[in-house]
Amino acid sequence: MGLNHVYVVTQEDRQHDAETKGIHWVLASTFIVGTMVGAGLVVLPKALSDTGLITGLIVLLGGAVFSVYTGNLLGENWLMMRKRWRKFALHCHDPYPEMATRALGKRAGIFVRLVLCISQFGVAVVFLILASMNISSLLEMAKIHIGFCMSLPAISLFLWPLVMLESPKDFWQAAVCAALCTMCAIGLLFYGIAIDRPTCGPVIAYKDPEIMGIFLSFGTALFAFGGHSCFPTFQNDMKNPKQFSRVIITAYLVIILMYVPVSVFAFLTYGNSLSDDASKSIQSEWIRHGVTLLITLHVTAALVIVIAPVSHSFEKLCNVPNRFCARRLIVRSLLWAAVLFMALSVPKFGVFLDLVGGSTMALLSLVFPPLFNMFLGAAEKKRQMTDDREENETIIASVYDVLQCTPKHKLLLNTICICIGVLSGVAATTSALRSIFSLDVATPCYMRPFIHLPDSYSTPVFSGAFCCGESRSIRAPFFNGTCLKH
Image (cartoon, rainbow, N blue to C red; front, top):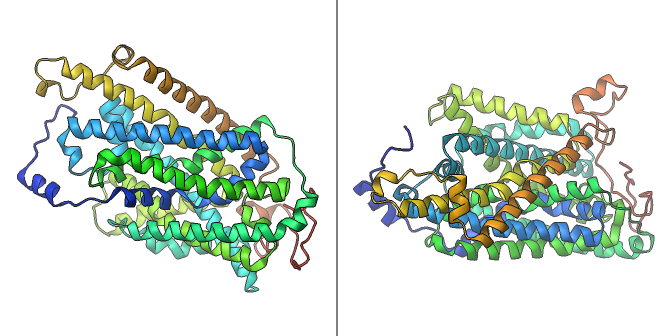
């Protein structure tokens, strides 16, 4: 069915719309905080270590500011769509691809749907690697030595039945719990860093920032602040969607207050001894495992939610009925197996996170929102100048229309945002791919038995902590564990 189809709003639709209470803007902010915080908490300190404090803060806060601006643009886009097409004020399963379709046509909608699937797939891989790393570390505390490469398939098998379930219709409790877990993890991180500081502060060492590290850090920042694919859904569920700008500002202020202080404190305490996971630098065992447990609870719950949109897209492509059946079992099992294979192939989650952040997150967070905003705005102005608006409900603006109808200051700002998104995305993606194919990345798990690493499946790779100093060998007086080197 093409774009020229006229959607008729039935009495049932109006009744459903009237009976839908919607969520308060505070709860919508909680949704954003709960779904975005988590992995970024433990990787942003490493991003500062790779760039230096001043440059790192510029990159980090720059990513946040651009994300706030483009998040507000998504809110404007959705309000324009609700005003122009009544159906979007009722219900929409996939608002971001619909936004692309209405702004640029069917092909753009298909492309955005593909980008969303790749992005969510990549986030699922990152979360699976992080959860498996944490679980293997927790098992080490219980003297159970299975190693990371065995914990990956184990946790995948445990989550496999949950992947078969429908995505939750009302999951605000999960978002609140995720936010609370992260806040508790932040408190433990601060305390653990504080008791390590007397030992680590005097021997701190910093490395000189490199251009590649700056681009990788920008990819990490985009990953940490890029929850844009869910924003239209949250806005559509609000009692008053016009308050979405308030939601964005509140949520990002909370997220910045969560991310920045702990990242700076960790960087000033550990320097270049930081690993991809900042919690591994804490030498107090109970604090380290407490943070690990809290982050694991967050990402494990998020995994099922993150993979659900990708599952639905593949089911729609394969004409799978909207119920549990053999075809759903096959499609979702193959998709989950693909996530596991990718995690086994790139077991160092930091560079994969940079890859996802620098590629798909750059498009979803920096490029698409201003692009769609200009085309939707120009199309609306063009439609208002026609005599018969009902016959022009599907008008799509041209580039000339955008240049003529968009206010000059907004055109300039949006163009800058798009250019930064494209250039930084390409640079971050290239840097991440170089890191993935370099010798710095851990060998894929399925290759280790064949390259003279026969004990890799049982070696406690993630036990212990990364000690202080340039050589990661300075211990706190209370630490009796193993100093990790890699």
